[in-house]
Length: 410
Image 1 (cartoon, rainbow, N blue to C red):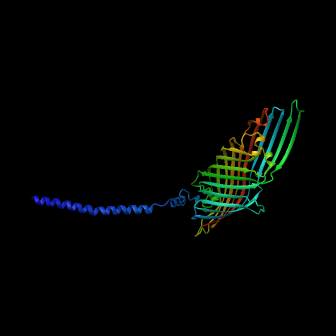
Image 2 (cartoon, rainbow, N blue to C red; image 1 turned 90 degrees about the horizontal axis):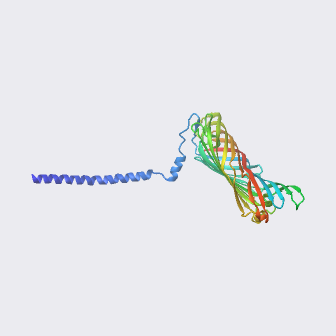
């Protein structure tokens, strides 16, 4: 009986060992298979990003907004546009030698109204474009670049403008002579001056928007072409705009810098935030009845008004080094902070969709002001006697345009 118990015990141990040997390779094989499958299923970063952008808009109320099955849009554009900057500089000078001077300088760089042609390419909501001036025989050609990512209810768009035009300066000056060394006299002078060479104006704009009514309203139904507004609807909006502006005078200028206070170039950074309302008015809508959007008919109008409050607006001035000492400035660069300003931007547009073709016309206007307020400076370098100057500068960057687009959706 003892041998039988030992034999029975050894048999059970052997059976258990064989079972473990058989199970272990199966577990290892299963684990290896799961690891390989997981590695094959995990997409790369680029694919995950494209999948996220390509994800259908599942938040629409289908009665109001619909997304056609298009991913790729080619847009041909034609514009009439004008961009510029206006500055008003007011200076009051008082000195111990019984001379006071009051100067009002109006500086303006405004391109002529010009025509521009360009092309945009849109893929999954990412849009890039380029435009250039047409119909002008000058060597100086105005250009613009567009880059943005837009969805029906939020987006960020960047624009770059490069304009070269001559600058005008209108100076109104009054000099008063008072005191024992002078006979009391006032001399009034008006001088109009135009630069000999074109100045270089560059602007970078970043525009952001957010629509609260994303279920029934699509901002890109008129300004994008990737969705269709089926019924009229509107939405309250939040907006943001950043503007970098730079004006640089040609280094070959000799007399003109004197009439603009010795300025060689100046720059501004503006950050504005605000809110407004946008409304899509649908006049006609008929869904497609065949492939390639055949039978689609839609006519929609939009109007958007967006008041904005400028919260950041520093100005930097760079002076001609040859005139720095003559004007009594300690350095060739000075910075000023502008007061907060109420600005605004407005757009209006119309889109007509016929099958895969989409014809869009829109009008935009941007106006961004700056105002440094009155500032006092000691100009002791002008002489050994007391001299004080009060200065105030205000102005605005602006642009407006009418754009027509022909879109082909694929």
